[in-house]
Image 1 (cartoon, one colour):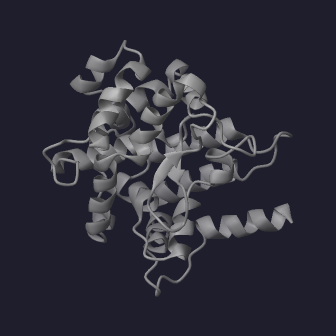
Image 2: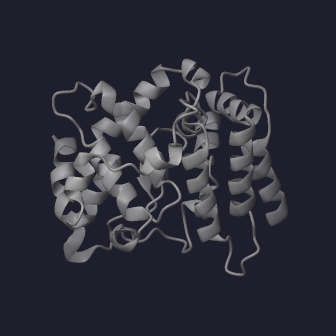
Length: 268
């Protein structure tokens, strides 16, 4: 049964299915398949994330490392199309939710989500995760003057920073197949007297007007985004982790100390 389920998921991720029904996520998958670099990197993370070599289950560390390579080195127009493809139905939304094998890369290892403070604390100590979270906070902080919470030149930076979190301890994903809501696999039910800190962190994803606006703007720009080409002079892995002056200003400070400031505009 496990083998059959894995085969079904593999076909869902890599197979080519007719998009006559308007499934934009199928279109995105087919565009990635047609690009040698995108297809090679996607095949690598699918192979790692579907592996059952480890006795305790999937090799989560290798799976997440392959995912980071995919989003760092793949053409952003294609990797973002897979991650943010707009959906009007549950079949499309479920395909989008399964994009990076969430059973390995997103949820687990336990049956219930932990307190968000656990992955956040791990992220604070991680040389991989911490700069990516700082970049996300700096790039996706809602702008009060913007109607949708995100300035026009901020949207692409926000989506790139969000994609940079995939494959880290705080990997976010779509929470269901009926909406475009995203969050890390955690909750705040068992946060004790630090519930406010926990909610502030989770709110960076669940109550972030800039992130929501950037995802919606990406959907409105479809399908021309599939025609964008990666700048051959660019270094996508470097640009993904490039820390702006705003990020550098945050370095050296506790992540929790800046969470309330960054989350506040999203609550207004």
